[in-house]
Amino acid sequence: MTQTPAIDDILGGQRRALAKAITLVESTRDADRDAAQALLQAVLPHTGKSIRIGISGSPGVGKSTFIEAFGRHLIKQGHKVAVLAVDPSSPVSGGSILGDKTRMEELSREANAFIRPSPSAGALGGVAQKTRETKLLCEAAGYDVILVETVGVGQSEYQVAGMVDFFLVLMLPNAGDELQGIKKGILELADAVVINKADGDMAAQAERTRGHYQSALDLLGRRSDWTPRVLTCSAIEHTRIDAIWELIGEFRALAEANGAFDDRRARQNLQWMQHLILALVEARLTRNEPLNQRRRELESRVQSGEITPYAAAREIVALL
Image (cartoon, rainbow, N blue to C red; front, side, top):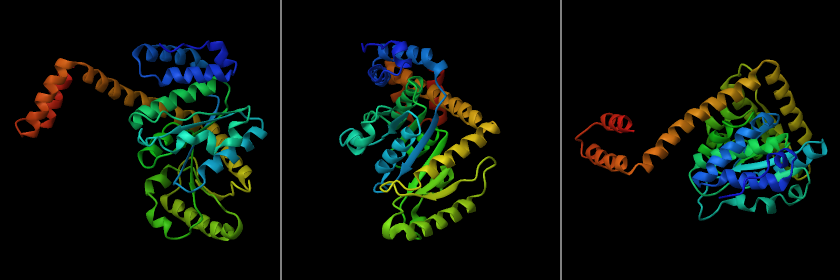
């Protein structure tokens, strides 16, 4: 069984205690899961004081460079920054996130930064659960800005958007054609789009791209509480990084003033609880061998057309 760190050590911001707590949360052993939930319940009153920012972007957009520049800017402003990740990549390849501390070498050396790779094994939903719980532990340890990076594409972006306060999408300065390929759903998730690499010969191109994306966002319609913006920046030159943080501050002030900030978190918690109910039922189902045997029998009958899928599912639920 993984050793449970002292709660006071976590609340005191001891990095070693925080790392041990996260290792406990990531464990798949039943005894560790029970200990992890007890620990999370104990630190829960000390969570929720951070701003949670999701960051997405396609490969080559400069996401690591941006997160490092952004994180170091926030630390200079007096903040403590934790960088987490949702990585649905194959456990064989490991995914790029395993090189996090290499990719963010300068940020990893900062005393007020904490970088934690996500576990690469398991389904996306499982990784997302670990990231949610790790986020709470980091908040309890005093990190007031949580950056959640999505390494994969597609479903991982929706998972991250469902656990953060502000969702930022990074794009490249290639105006025109890329608008045809971008998924409408990702723009609908975005609270802001940032055109990175707006430097040198690409500065003018980045500004044109900014206009294209702003038009695309405007076509999607205005939200009741926030109008998504499109900004440009250069993570390499560290230009306009401050404008992005100011925009997030504007978003937070507005959302807190009209109650949307707390409502969003409450809605996310409720949706996650509903997801976990289904996940726990599925886990209980797979551990019950007599039930599993009956399930396989019913699956065979469904495949042969002897029984409807609904009737089979209803029988399984009744047995459970």
